[in-house]
Amino acid sequence: QVQLVESGGGLVQAGGSLRLSCAASRVTYAMGWFRQAPGKEREFVAAISRSATSTYYADSLKGRFTISRDNAKNTVYLQMNSLKPKDTAVYYCAARDYFGSWYRSQEYNYWGQGTQVTVSS
Image 1: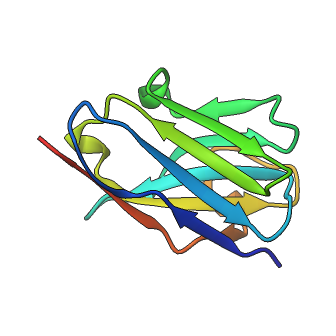
Image 2: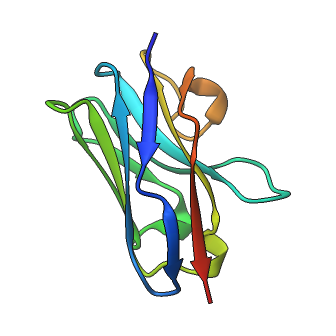
């Protein structure tokens, strides 16, 4: 079992930055971030391998968002720059212990409670 606790969400103006953190109770094979806006399905944001040598991003977010992890702290980060109002959503940290698709939420078996990110125009 893995417990995930997100932090770092909040209200920011368009063009601003936020860094989300996700503290895990132990290191896992893969960790990722997903987000869900009101009335929309949960969507993939970014993922990172255990060694941090491989990262994956939603095409629409490349260049603005950066995922990283510190295994010594069992923590994964999501640096979000040049934020836009359409980035407003609840952001969820996810993790799994086995190989699978990086992009599908169904492949992750551990989830955090989510942290709200609101970008004002």
